[in-house]
Length: 342
Ligand SMILES: NC(=O)c1ccc[n+]([C@@H]2O[C@H](COP(=O)([O-])OP(=O)(O)OC[C@H]3O[C@@H](n4cnc5c(N)ncnc54)[C@H](OP(=O)(O)O)[C@@H]3O)[C@@H](O)[C@H]2O)c1
Image 1 (cartoon, helix red, strand yellow):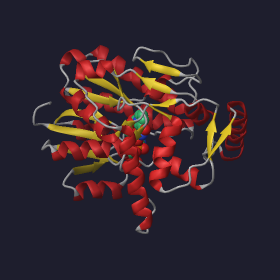
Image 2: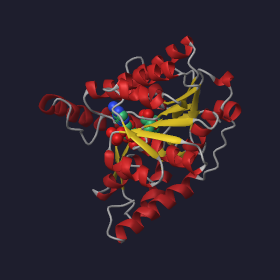
Image 3: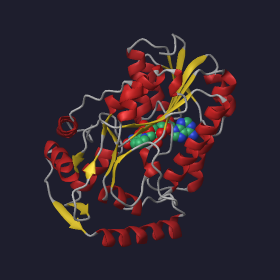
């Protein structure tokens, strides 16, 4: 690991950054966490983690104060959503990354771990055992993908200038603290039969949050020959879509009902909803269905993680179905205790 000097975690008020900050602190590393949400920042402070708020896209001067004295930075902050205003994605994913890179260069940071996403390779097609050098669709399916690609390009340019950066592309994170993947699935199931786009049963390649955290720690420790490399990260246990859904819904105590919908029908509906959002809300309203979401649920995308296994000694141990069952049971217990679901 990069000595006993401080490690800055951006996006520490979010799912992955928060889990990384907590694990590094548990292992005794001096951590400095940053984000914008003061309530979540206070929760980190209460857990004994130093927290300094910063808007990474708007305040490069404050950011530079954070990177000074840090040996390493984990850049997990991003706007991660299927829909939204382009300017918001550019600010959070491109401008913020540019500012992080500059601050790392100026402060002499010795390792930057940049969190990207395998969605940069997304295409409306089955994709199996994708390697890191695969290429995605020429025209990105949404602004999240376009801006995550642009951020990777900024990192690659900084590596050519000498920055010691490693890029991780974790796929579909789940676990306690997830506000996206499982909560969205559960909400859909609560509203009736779960729509299954397309006739097949594609493989879903998920990543348990604990595995993603181990990957980040491994990237912080990785030798300098890994500089500039990109690594795919999953729990290495892809499962058919129907099995994933059945496991989570049964554990939640929700009815397991599926409604098959042809892909063409779903794409037409999603396209119409996107038009409504563009025309009447300037993209501020997120449609319940986008063409990207249809594609991501209709087509499987599995990743080859052998490079991370070899170079980073990344060794995921998680039984994905058992972990999904645990998450569902936690959600059910929380609802029974009068909460909104864990
Ligand atoms: N979740 C997944 O399944 C998944 C899959 C593939 C890749 N990833 C990547 O993994 C990373 C972490 O994702 P996540 O699920 O943990 O996201 P998340 O829970 O939505 O958290 C996003 C974090 O980014 C921070 N942030 C956004 N814009 C910011 C800005 N301008 N200045 C400062 N902080 C800013 C947020 O801070 P505040 O909330 O305090 O504003 C929050 O802490 C992202 O790079 C994402 O693209 C995630």
